[in-house]
Amino acid sequence: EIVLTQSPATLSLSPGERATLSCRASQSVYSYLAWYQQKPGQAPRLLIYGASNRAPGIPARFSGSGSGTDFTLTISSLEPEDFAVYYCQQRRDWPPWTFGQGTKVEIK
Amino acid sequence: QVQLVESGGGVVQPGRSLRLSCAASGFTFSSYGMHWVRQAPGKGLEWVAVIWFDGSEIFYADSVKGRFTISRDDSKDTLYLQMNSLRAEDTAVYYCARMGAGTTWAYFDYWGQGALVTVSS
Image (tube, rainbow over all chains, first blue to last red; front, side, top):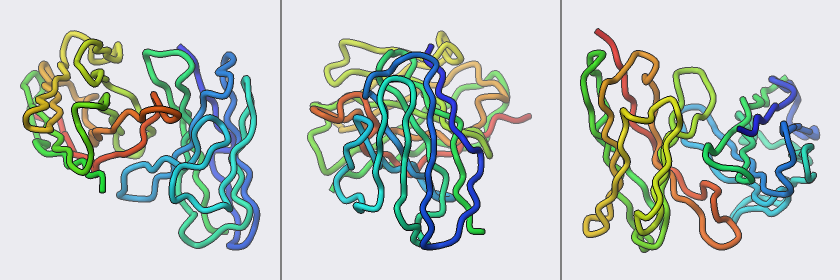
């Protein structure tokens, strides 16, 4: 089973700042990695797939990068609606489909 | 637009059974694989089960294997999760999620709003 480790657990930033979230895989997942956003009381939403491709309707301030074992989600300038929990997920080796434990982006 | 609506959640005693449903609309249900993903209170996401678009492949997480059964009824555009021998650790919000196709294959491209299952005596 591929284990995904996200860091940091919590990121405290102000609106307008840049957010950089990390996801590290226990073995190579090539570029088979996605990022999801989850707001309180809501279902997750697909943001990025294939490590760097934005899902339909996702604003350009969200970008993904990386391959192999190290991946990054960047939010170039935080909007108020971006404060949420973010999860990475791999599809390289399944079952099981695995998620990281999440990074919470909170308002500083 | 794609919609997934779960139902059937509730409070159930340990050892009992419950069946969740997920009604799909806005897309050709029979063309997509479907997953169940759960989230315990205050915790992260845990994949539970998947069924291929044609039902030819079914996989389960080890934590539910032998107790849960995923199925689908394409005539009703509905996904099911039969949960037997429920345990306290099965307490979670259960989401149905569509398996993407094409470039988003094997990612979760649309999610329902979730159904809360509480296992407690």
